Image (cartoon, rainbow, N blue to C red; front, side, top):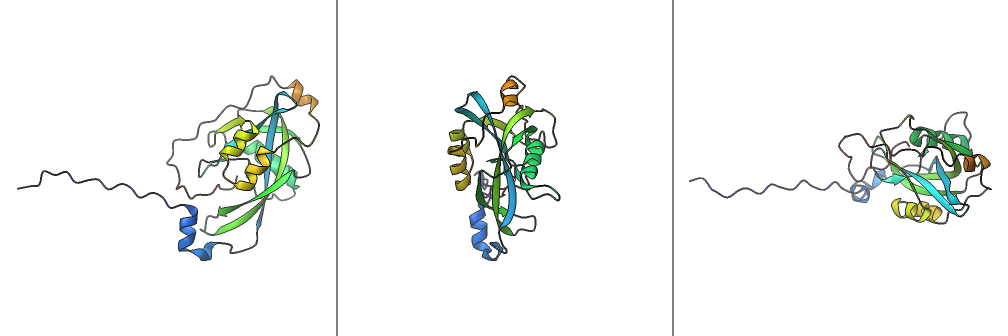
Length: 205
């Protein structure tokens, strides 16, 4: 007689976190010096000089909230590379401060499985233009939030500190004020693809 008991379906194993994976292969950690990256802290005024909003985007690999960032670019100065990342990832342009307003570090997993520490210099951009058509549209979500909310959403501790205490380092742009009524960058839905494991660290932003 066949058993009438229904076999329980085994639950799929949860993907390992980054730290769990590193515990199994510690030789993958810190295989070299810190890698340099540049990031764009894009902001706009939300109605007054003290009311600032920060633009966050999602990583294409992990889906977590970050600010636009990427590797150095040939023949581009650091602040120029940060501005290009902001345009390609979020479709925004504006007045870029040439000096970094801060920096933070994080661990990045490379395509070969190695994990390297990255040091990210952050450049502020006061957004004056926002387009709905840009290179990575449809691959990320975009959202404007207050500094405290931006700090709550990102995971990197040093970046949290930078965002929650952020105050623009220069006077408000006249152009930004006059363009306040321009269309805001729309939130672009992520494509319908299977989300990567939780351990995935954001790719080349």
